[in-house]
Length: 225
Image (cartoon, rainbow, N blue to C red; front, side):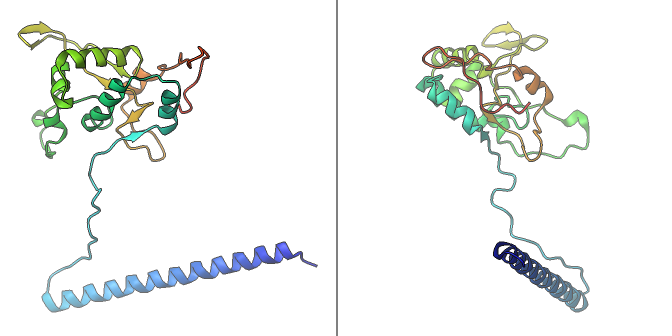
């Protein structure tokens, strides 16, 4: 004799199957109606038509994802100052997709073009300290102090590139500021992390020596590369 639980489970499975079959039938009928309407329009106008959906208001809109549990840990151990938190919050708007490099406002929100010729490609300009100061509304001196503090705390990296450029009347090596993706990431994360491999290599071993207020070593809850 079947138990009551077994009987209930079987009844639930049958109900779910019935709902699935009903939903499938409705969707099939809806597709047939769409095809019929399109065929009628073609017969009446002699032109081909298609059924479009209303555009998703978030489609193509850039956004970042914050690693909540990692950020929660930094908050609990008072790792960041209010000035550093404020700066990071403002910098979110200027991260380059897939690299996490801070780029200039003009390049971040420039309308993208489709390039037929690789020679037409224009690399987005990495933001300098002066650019970042203007973007976040702080003085260059304040900005430089905060960025370097975040660099010491491994929240930012500022690697030096090859070559020489002119900046503020002097010749310097080009540098880029990159935000640690273990805290904030500007890249798709469905099924896999589609982040620039170089960025992942640069931060792979970061934030491994965190300590709480009592000097006890703590670990980031989430490490995904």
